[in-house]
Amino acid sequence: MTSAGRVGVVFVSHSERIAEGLVDLARQMAPTAALVAAGGTDDGRIGTSFDRVNTAIGEADAGAGVVVLCDLGSAILTAETVLDFLDDEQRGRVRIVDAPLVEGGVAASVAAESGAPLEEVVRAAESARGSGPPGAGVGEAGAAATAVEATPASTTHARRITLQNADGLHARPAAELVKLATTFPQRVTVNGTDAKSLLSIMALGLVKGDEVEIASSDPDGAAAVDALAELAASGFGEA
Amino acid sequence: MGLDINWAVDWVRRSADVVSEHRVELINLDREIGDGDHGENMDRGFQAVLPKLDDLPAGSTPGDVLKLVATTLISTVGGAAGPLYGTAYLRASSAVGGEVSLDGNAVAALLQAGRDGIVARGKAESGDKTMVDAWTPAVDAAASAAAGGADAAAVLRAAADAAAAGAVATEPLVARKGRASYLGERSAGHRDPGAQSSALLLEAAAEAASNGTSA
Ligand SMILES: [Mg+2]
Image (cartoon, rainbow over all chains, first blue to last red; front, side, top):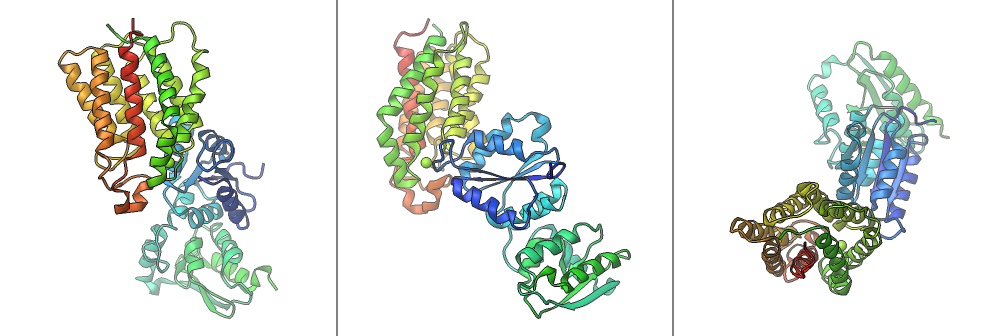
């Protein structure tokens, strides 16, 4: 099973089609993660179903935890009720995250795809809460970016490349960059923004022809910087 | 005289009847300030409980009936009412434990546990224009009736009357919780459907108690 040991993501919506659409959307950037739709009532009407949510959490849970995202208030009530009925052990690794369903769901799915642990997937979803420029009030990633910007002199490795691919750093290319960044323990930035935060990277709005600085202030960050720079320079496999 | 399993079963049957009777009214109340599904959802939920009553094993207690209602509503009511009422009945079931016969104090405790469950689940406060605005006056009235030595039937009567008044009193309120809160000021002037269904259910409880079905 490809998703074994990874965090799963459950989309709870009043609408079956919204939940399934969200899985389709997130699937583009997280092709192998356990993404499960739990939309509509048992007979497919508008509403939420205890059994569907319960089953979805079971399907999404490979032991590493599950992040549950909900649309409207009563979806949260249903999800919370499901959690009440889980055994203590499983309940401990299921998190209902208060985050925008679309952006939070995509961010969580990409983090889950990369094999990030539960807390990191939760943070990825929560990073979608804030609006505004990257690094400004978008949770821990933003706070960390600000801290780094305060000490720019400590950057030890940096490479500048020009984006070649048609999409720039958006959608799939952004997800690939983030996925690669999360495989390195060191912190790496793209134009000062945390390379592990999908939403922050996408919010940079970098397009074809833009110059990008990939940098790390970590003494061991050179390999990560090189890997990300090479991926970006390669055009992400696009024409 | 305490209330036993027969009262609990009768309460459920009367609840199913009254919810069916008022189905359209609840739909209309919910349509005015919500999504219009409350009457249908509640009707489906209680109709799903009815056949399960026949499968209750001999020796079942009022708490068992409440638990059956809880799990059935949770799994069959698609809207917020499912988890909210489900949690209420579940907490009420725990509050009465395995008691075979409920006196006035036990009924007051049952109602309070139910209300506390709704508050815990929905995080609504009094005045938010939700079912809490029917339940909290009912719980208060039940507590003072029980403290005054009222029997179980009288406690339920006091609770039902207070819930009915509480539901009416939601009309001028501006909703601060649930779907109706999206309407803001426009939610004023309409009775909250959840408060109304709560009043109907507590009225059914009082009628079941006064109808001599208790031991
Ligand atoms: Mg409704």
